[in-house]
Image (cartoon, rainbow, N blue to C red; front, side, top):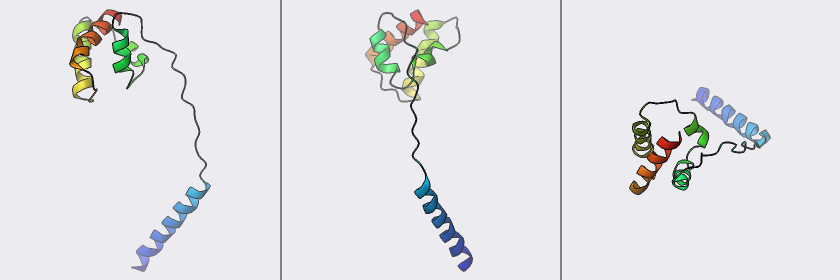
Length: 102
């Protein structure tokens, strides 16, 4: 029993001492430099999509032949897989904006 108590006490003491000397980490995230392109239903896209990621993420999607199908699948994935709280009434608006703009 003494073999397990001594390492546990040593580890607890080392953790407490290390925490006492740890400095807080301060950092500033960079400002958003990209913006959604202007277009119909821009406000709907900003209100739904930018809650989770930047416009950079959308702009860096690869070129595709079937834009509407691609964006429909992406919006559906965001809702079903990632739990994005997008109203059914907004889905078509978002897909139309993305297909026309990106």
